[in-house]
View 1 (spheres, rainbow, N blue to C red):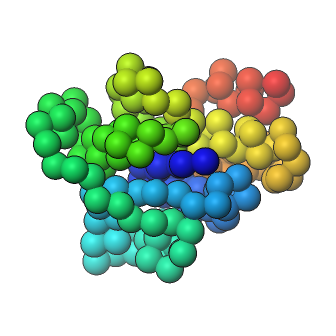
View 2: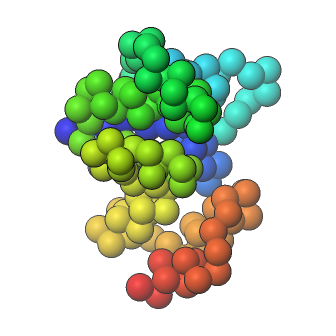
Length: 157
């Protein structure tokens, strides 16, 4: 199974100490250079930067530079654009991405997507994590936005 990730899910899962849940489901995850740079080039320690630098199962892969990236960057940031292009280049089975416009763009190109919430919901359904409600509350407290209706739907099915 080929999995590509944008920075959002890596950051959010790191903030709540759940990044290892990715390894439970996926043997390896590919990230484009722009995502790697976004997470590791800052002077401050961004959530996920340590994991990206030290994990053997998160692999950086270069995206072919072409006009498609320039076109996508009119609507998306560089990391999202490269993640979509890498998913397309690798014929990935899944793209991990939270940004709504990025998800829509990926879907229009036939790429299956899942976000942080979908991953946590799946982990809860498969008993890979305990107390989804507690994790969701912590995720919200650490800056992840979700409306109350979605929160209730995930917690109560």
